[in-house]
Length: 140
Length: 149
Image (tube, rainbow over all chains, first blue to last red; front, side, top):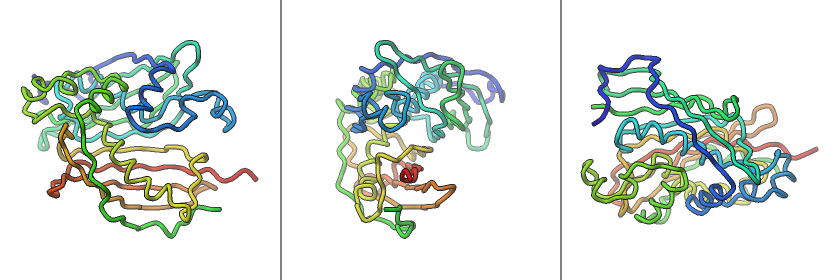
């Protein structure tokens, strides 16, 4: 069952999760999304364009960050709007992995529309990688 | 070659139908770590009132990027993809995308603005079902870095 709007308060934390990403996941995302930009799988190319190494697709990070919101709201179809700014790349080491931390809190409530805006704080090693990350969910 | 700001305001004709497949939605969900069963299990999706498995919230980027290629792969637009950085992205869902959807996209070039040496290109993909029912609006802004001098 979906959370009820009247039970929510602005500022309330509704979900928190850690999502791990390694090179294999980026290759999987490249295949599923059709985004084969080599900066997401080829270290040589990534370094040649001035990056610190292979970085995650911004769209992977955006897609992964909304998962905890979907699980909280109970139906992916309730996410009616979702936006982010890409503020900092997410380097993905090899060997190893990067851990993306997501904290979701109520940013605004609209009783008339029956929606809540959920603001996401998305960080890697304490630094924000997404800005203005906001999902609007329909609760009625 | 600099980005041709004259492309701002352009609207492309509807592109080829994009068929949304169940297995593709399952692969995409697995790649972004989307664990909700409505992405993978038809019965779970139907129990929530959806006609078939539904897409994760960012799947529409796959459909939008097909349409955006009309601009980015046009040599006359002067967009060097090796110098492109994704600045922001927004999805507005008029209804969920589901397996079996046949989607048609109209690409709008909303603006091309030069700012501090960067060309900021904002596109809007209006995604609809074949019968015209609006499905999703995907707004994307890319920053194109200037060539090394």
